[in-house]
Every structure is written in C-alpha cells, then in structure tokens.
Image (cartoon, rainbow over all chains, first blue to last red; front, side):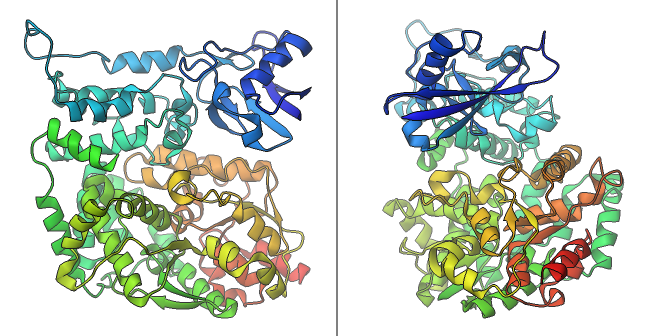
Length: 328
Length: 293
C-alpha cells in the first residue's frame, strides 16, 4: 500500500524551528509505522533520526506522536490507522534532541525523585519475602510499565506545570506504596501532597488512553489521592473538594458549584480571587441559586454514600490492593 | 425517540442556558425527554476519586431509574457521560459486583440489571436521529462560520469505555458541525485536550494556563467560536476566559454549547437559546448567522 509519512523534523543545533517533511513510500500491508520509518531511513533519507530497539513493544524506545498522540511506532500497524497520510512527531513535554529523538533526562529525574526502590522497615528476612499472590497480581498491572514516556508526552498537567511529577513516576510510586515489603508508604504519600503532587493531575485520561501497556497511571493517581485522604491527609484543596463534594451530594443529591468552591479553596484571599468570575456570572444570571434545589430521594443518596463508606476497607496495603484489583 | 433525560447539575446550575437550549432544541428535533428529576449527581469523577464503590452505586441508581421507565439515558454533559460509561464498564460486566451494588439500591425498590444504555446528545444525533435528518431540519445553515469542536475529555477517553464498539465517536462533533452548514475546524489541535476545569480549585494557575492554551490554539487556526458538548468545559472556556493569561490582549473567543449551535441552525431565536447569558459576548456569532441567514 502507498502511504505518506508527514514527519516533523528539527535539528535544534542548526534549525531555528521545526519543519515538516513528507515521505511517500510503498509498504506491505503488515508494516508497522516503525517498519515504514526504517524503510525511509534506509532507502530515502538517511538523515532522519529516530530511536528504536526491540521492535516488539517490549523495550519502550520508539515512543513518538502518531496523528497527534503518543504511541509506540512498533505497536502501530499502518493498516489499523487506515489513513493515506500519517503525521509523525517527537513526543511532547520533552526537549527535542533531533527529529523524533527526545531528551529523556527530565523524565528519568522525575522517576528517581520518587525513590523507585523498596524501603523495608526491617532487615531483609533470611529467605525470600513472602507476599500475597493477589497483591502482586494487582501490582503486575503497574510493573508492566516499560518506561516509554508516552503518558508523560501527552500529560496535560505537565504541559503547563513543569514541576508536576507526572504519570510514569506516579504509577511507579503506587507500585511501591502498595508493595507489602515497602514501609515508606506514609512518607511517600505525604511527599505527594504538595505542589507538583497528585492533586496537580487534571484528570484528563490522556495517560490512560496512550499507555501501550494499560498501566492506567491516572487511575493510580486517583487511588493514591484516596489513600492519602483515608490516612487523614485532608488539608489540601483537593481533599477538601472531595469531602465537600460527598457532603453536598449527600445533602442535596446534586452538586452546587458555588458551595463546592467556597468549601474547597483555602482562606478568604483565594476565594476573593474568584470574586470577579462570580460577579460576571451573577450579572448574566448564571450564578446557581443560593439555596440549591434538593432532588427527590436525597436522603436515600446520603444513605448510599454512608453505607458504601462503611464497606470501604480499613486496613491499608493488602486489602486496598485487593479492593483496587476488583476495579482494575 | 424517547429518552430518560439526565441534564446533569451544571446545566441546571452554572450554565442554565444549556438546559434552556436543550429543552427548545429537543422539542424541535422530536426527542421525547423524560427528565430523571430524582437522579443524583454522577460525582463528576470526584465521588469516584473519594469512594469508587459509592460512585458506582449512585450512578447505578440512575440507571435503575431509567430501567424502570424502559428508556436509555440521554445526557448533555461530557463529564456525566464519561463517568456513567466508566461505571457501566465495571458494573455491567460483573454479576457479583452488580449484586453488591444492587443491595444498596434495594431500599428504594430499585434494581439495575446491567442493560441501561447511556448516550450523550452528540451520540444520539449521529446514531439515533441521523445526520441526514438533522441536515433536513436546518433552515438557517451556519455558512461561513468556522466552528472549532471541543469535545471534553470524558466523552472521548478512555475510548474502551466511551466507544466500546469503535463507532468513531471521536469525530462526531465535526460531522454535526458540518451538518449544521458550518465549517468544522479539523486542524484544531485542542479539540480533545483538557479545558483545565478539574484543576480549578487545586491549581488555578495551571487551570487557567490550560484554558488559555485551548483558546489560543483556536485563534491560531482562525476559529470564529468553539462548540462544546460539555458544560464543565464551558465554565472554564467561557466563564474563566477573562481570567486567562492572554485575556484583554487578544480577541475574545465565544463558546457555544452544542444544543445552541443546533438551535441557531434549525431556526430557534438566539434568546430562547440563552446566547445572551454567556460571559464572552456571542454577538459576533449572531452577526455572522444573521448575514448567513
């Protein structure tokens, strides 16, 4: 089949800005994007720079943006894309070294920052550690991460907030927080309660969507938010929002945006920063009613929320992992 | 076509013009909407974040109410839709888990069998009504308008939950815009990205930076306005627009709710669509529509 690859190229040492270069190639139906790019490099333009190694989605080297979103080139079958023109760009949120090759140093540094190794409380046992099967099965879902950087590439929060730890490192953190051999879970979680931490995630599902190994980093971030709140870390605006949300829905059965905001932000100063927005809404007749409408059956909703809470596992680690596993 | 209508909290709260527009448009399109007045908030992802089981039960309660009516649920909010589809992916497939959920619904004599279908208006337009039928109802085609689609994350991701049959739902908004006679801005890169709303209380600077980026991307490709099926996105893109870093130095970008764009094209007067209730003035759009009309 005939295919056109529209590749964004740049040599930052020589070019002021990126430029697009089109390559038309004829390839067999079974070709992956990586196969096609290698064909271009071998037969058409030897200056095209890209990274790759295993060619079978194990090593995580060939991450790039395909039609706007991060993917592994070796896992992307051209026939599945079903398009005559495929747009190829380097991954986002990382500096370009050349063409499709990005600088992963910031990526690794974020990963190192979460201490990606076991921190046991006691000396290692004489023989092996014994851990429950279910827990490790659950953690397999995260251990499958191949560090390709796809989630970081498309992370919306990171695009506006460079100190955000990011999805790969958070998924790795989750893996240690829930590992029965690691004893630093409280310390780990409290470190993620500040700027750049879990509350800076914008819940956009980009990382979940692009991960080639179904690690679902955002789901792990949400689980860690929950664990933090269950451990009593409830001072952050995010935790206050979650608790206020539960309470408002338990009271009225529905959300009241104004009350939610008032109960989520910290102090009068922060609330005042929203005052202009509020006045404009009021002027246009858009401010929600001062006394929210209560749905029929609001008490039943409160009962549901309370009974569900009583069913929440109290013991951390193993039980939590099992509980999370049910939903994975 | 009958639906159990779930307007969501924001359409009856912070963006009342959406509810107003949907009511007017639904009638004209021949959608019979039975509003689920007793249904609770989906939790917008926050209940799920705090207590996933509670989120699954509260939403299953809504599905059970629709089941009693024997109707599929229709939403007008990307966030509501995404949350519901996520709940369905957990509750529908696992009988044991659904039984646990149903135990908490028994108080109200509700039971969810795992069958209730959930559809955003956007999906209803393409899959149930049909674009040809929509086109046939257009009396005031929005010719000459470049409308940038803005989906809202939850209605497109995770795709395994919101488009399990791979119908190509990411792409419907462009088709609807085209059916209304306007030009969908295909090259708009922000269309499936984040509006910043979920960061509003936790990192406002980041939230407004994202909003500003989405608006700048729309200006860069010469869009006249954005069209969104998500009122939460609207709260940021329209309501917070004057607070974004570039505001005042660049042209303001009007943001229409999906039913408003439909309403204009099928000949409903702008006042009935609540277009005067936006923070960012919509006169620019209305002038174009008047010229086109």
